[in-house]
Image 1 (cartoon, one colour):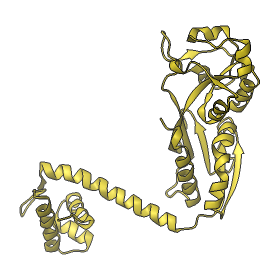
Image 2: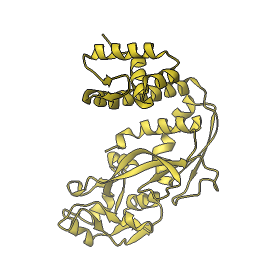
Image 3: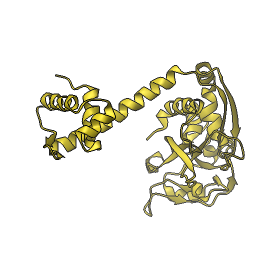
Image 4: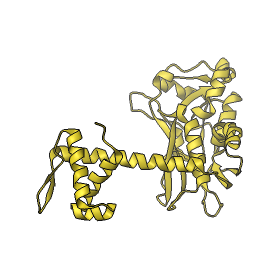
Length: 298
């Protein structure tokens, strides 16, 4: 015989309420009806979940195991029902999204057409800032940030993680033979970032560890500028896969030292101010873009 979700709810309510009478009042049932429901559940499972006397109840070992899993199942069912309810509604209104220009250009803009077809009543406003912004001051609903988060006042939702590629153009490599060892990078022109300094720690495996610090010969504040400098043959750069994979596939950039790259991934988060209920238009966008970022996950 199959266990019904109602029986799971009854079991969890009895344990959390501490007594049959309290749970029965909460559920709008009589204590006898609730007791019969518990007995049916135990009969279906062929085990005793609760040792019950006139004065007290105590979970058995099997009951503790079943309680933990029953609560998880009920939570998943509740979340699924909420998502289905959201799907039946029509999201609308203005949605302001901010992201660093490379991510906006390479990971968001290519999907905007599809998003607008799915949600025609949402009016999008897209802005690009390579440094973190104040969401309230800039009237931004959600910002997408790459790397480690530090602002605890924001709610963060993980969207994925992007590997890094060490790249140079065919033109540069025609003039400077490709490095075959990590320490050979010292002999090359290196393109890095003005800030944050952590972006100049390249995830390369070598005898001294899994990070190779560089002193850039050319530094830029934007990843898109770094990419264009690499395309222009100005040196070797270490940039995220979401803005270099297409160039590598087209032959505009060549991947270097792949066997020396560590398994580090740049975390990608959506951040927004904590609310009791996330606006439907924001929820729809986060679900949408997270699905499109699936290939970038480790």
